[in-house]
Each structure stands twice: as structure tokens, then as C-alpha cells.
Amino acid sequence: MAVYTVRGVAPEDVREALKNYPELVRDILYHRGVRTRHEAEQFLHPDYARGVHDPLLMLGMERATGRIMEAIEKKERIVIFADYDHDGIPGGVILSDFFAAAGYKNVHVYIPHRNVEGFGLQKESVEKLAADGAKLIITVDCGITASAPVARARALGIDVIITDHHLSNGSIPEAHAILNPKQTGDTYPFKELCGSGVAFKLVQALTKELKTKNLQLKVIPEGWETSLLDLVAIATIGDMVSLTGENRTLVHAGLMALRKSSRPGLKALVGIAKLDQGHVSEDDVAFMLTPRINAASRMDTPELAFNLLAAKSALEAEPLVTELNHINDQRKGLVASVVKEVHRRLATRPELPEVIVVGDTDWQPGILGLAANAVVEKEGRTAFLWGRGDSLDIRGSCRSKGGVDVVDLMEALPKETFIEMGGHTNSGGFSITSEHLHHLEEQLNEAYRKIYGGEPQKDETVFVDGKLSLGDVRWEVYGELERLAPFGVGNPKPLFMFSGVTIVEVKHFGSDKNHLQLIVGSGGVQALAMSFFNTSGSFGTELTNGMTIDLVATMEKSVFRGTPELRLRIVDIV
Image 1 (cartoon, rainbow, N blue to C red):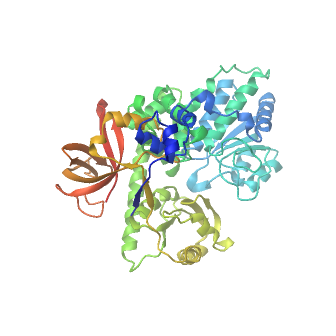
Image 2: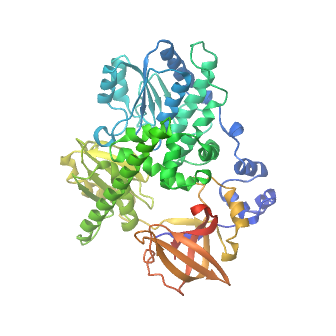
Image 3: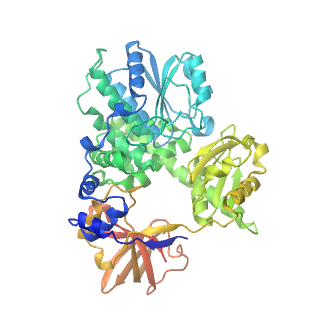
């Protein structure tokens, strides 16, 4: 359960500096680090020419482009080794599109299978690619922790260029070049690019480099790389990196490109998701497009998503998007089945520990991150789920909320516990032997007690941008808030408290009646409020007509069936 705190107003000097903006916008800008008129103009009007940095500022860029030009000159086989998710796959298409535009054909795209090969560059994959004649491997969204596979590649006569954005594990691979703004010694001005963002910077540099070479390739028109921004936006939004700085510029320009994109695969994907392409938002990308892209790897067919995004015609794209949508539906069913089984097992326990470990050898590892999210939401505890499915190893995913760092937990265990492990603060992955699995829950809870003193996981504190009345839910206010978009990590959608409103009508909709619609009223004004995948009983007490509630919500525009509608999206009811 969240605890809500309303933010204060901006101090007088900031209010004076931002006096040309509405009061509500002033306060929101202040709490997002904007203090001056100049900063506000840059924030509210992202400009591609001004907001995108020179790619040659990135450490290793000249060495990377030089080796790629050498490979082209020698007609060597180049392999694009892309991660299997919503970041790696678009990045793979970005690089593939560059080589196609340049007319260089001795290029192969390789995407590992999540459930069989696991994450990142592996020695077995390197050996397979060497047997195929590869002389240069360019990774996308992976490789920074792949010291042993890179060493194996060198031994086999293959150079590796790593493009990645993850943190290293302390051991830096001896690659020909590493492009990663987070690496030690890199002074690139922006550190939060996603994997596809780093691949895009490489393409930017390569298009410049091509102009200085005489390699008898096709001429790439000035500004051609902006045609890739639709893919950059999808990857950046999907990977939940900070939508500030250069990422804000890339996503702002990328969403505009996506709304006009002629890319057959994207048009097919937008169509099957029943979206209006001209109005695609960051929410549409996050909740409708990237889950479908991810479904391919979760169900062990990652090349399906790549082939769709790389499709050159509607005729090629249509059967691919149909299959991808079918796989996504299967994925939803499998996740729901796992979550149901986890809750069934947990219900038999007299008491739940702070760290839950549940698994089954029949579960596909690729879907367990989604299932773990659902378990964390319901139980309010950190969850480690494991499975084997078609994999040779036991693999799992872990999720937490309330300030528990899953990587810290895993690192607190003896080194021999995990075959592999890693991740971010609230999400991670691991592989483990059956021998060490037996005591995993006990060891993780012991680590939890040592790190967090055995205290129960705390309710999350959520900051609300202001208190509004239902009379503020009007197009003029929404228009001012919309200028703050695109929203995401680092720039969340403005959140408001509507206190003391009355429920006029409760309604459920959808084929399974699993979505909630409320009409709420106050002071003679009514507003429509929606919540997807929640019902009238999802907020701690059954909601009924006439009940007075405090509503925590964002304001949004819906263009369902082509008719613009202003409504509230329910975040919580307290």
C-alpha cells in the first residue's frame, strides 16, 4: 500500500523566473529540476538538432567506426549480436538498416534464445559464429560483462565491438572497442542511453565516417539516421531509462517519427494492437507495443520480433505480426497460470517470509519476470521465481519494491550459490544449480535480515504533484500538462489527489469484466475515471454508489474509436 505526500509549491524566486507559465506547471517544473526560463524552454520544447550530442564524444567511438570501415573494406563477415528484448532487437534493426542503406551485405544478425542460451554473449555462441566465418562481432545491449566470451573470440581471430549501457561487473572485456557511456573514463555528456540509444550513436558516427571514405558503397542521404528514431523511441521507453536530457529529445522526436512511420512492421504492430498510429503515445509503446516485442523472446522465438521490425513490405509483415500476437496471447495465459499457481502455494503457508522463493521445472524462465511482478504487487514482498522449461539450467527472475535491492541480496550469498546473477535495484535474474536451490529461500531471508534488520518491507511513499478539484479536469489544463510529455522514468506523468469526491456510478467493462469505470462527482461537476485490470474490489474495500473517496489519478486523453475524450486514469483510491 502506498503512502501519498503532496508536493509543496515552488519557492518565490523560481515562481518569478517561471511566471510566464501556469501556476500548476511552474510547481511541476520546479520539482523536476527546472529552475529558470531557459531551462523551461529547453524542457518544454525538445529540439533534435540542439539536444543530441556528437557521437564522437563517446569513448571508443573512433576506434569502433575505424574497425567497421576496415571490415567493410576487406569484405569481412560482420555479425550483429543483439539482445533478445525490446531494447536489443530494435538496436539490431538499427544497425542492420545502416548496413542495408550503405549497401554492405556480408552481415548476419544473431539473437540468442533466452530460455536456452541465457543473456548476453556466450562462448558457445562465439564458437558457432566463428565456424560461420565471422571476423567482427558488434554486440547490442549486452557484452560489458562478457570477458570470457570476448577472450574466446580473440583466440578465434574475431574482433568484438561492444555497445552496451549496463554496468560492468568489475572485469572489463578485452574488446577491440567498447561503447558504453557508463564506462570509466567516458566523458560523454549523457550517461542514461539505452542499448539501442548507444547503437544509434554508432550509426550516427558511421554515417559521418562513410562520407570521408571511398568504399564504393551507396551514398546515405544527409539526416537519414533520423528515420531510425521510431525504433530508438520504442527501445528507450521500453527499457525504462531516464526520460531526461538526450533521451527526452530522442523520444520526443522518435514518437513524432513513429506516428508517421512507413516501416511496414511497425504499422502492422500498431494495427494489431488497435492503436491510432497518428496518436501513439509513450503509454501505448510501453503497454501495447513492447510487451508484444518481448513476447517473442519470452516464448523462445526472438527472431520473429526482429523479422517483423525489419520487414520491408506489408505482405512480409502481416503473417509475422499475426504470429507474434498469437504468441503474446499465449504468453499472457502462461503468466496468469504461473501467478495463480504461486498464490495457491503461498496460501498453504501459515506465514510468508520477506523474500519468497517459488518455482517449478515446467515453468518457462522467460515469463517469470512478469509473474514475479504480479506476486510482488499482491503480496508486498520480494519474489524469486525459478523454472527450467526447455533450458538446460534452472533460471529465474526476481522483483522487489519498497527499497529492497535484489542484487544486494544475491551478492550477500556465498559466491558458489549462483551460476550467474545480475540486474538492477528492483529487478534481476539468476541461474542456479539444483543443489543450491534447496536452501535459496532460507539464505535470501538471512541476507535480508542482515541488510535490512529484519524490518518488514515498507509501504512505498508516492509524491503527488498537487490537489485538484474535478472542475480542473478540462481540456485547457490537460493541454498545459501535455507540454511536459513525453513521460516516463525521471519525468513521471503528473499525479493528482482529488479529495472527497463521490462515486456516482460503478461499472465494469471488457470481455472478462476485469476493467473498472467510475463516474465521480463533486460540487456539481462529474468526471470519468478508469482503471484497467482492476475491479471495484481491488482497492481494499468494495466500491459502491454514493461512497466518498479520495482519488489519486492522472489526467489523460483517450482517442478510442476516434473520438477525443478527457478522463482520469485511476492510480489508487484511498
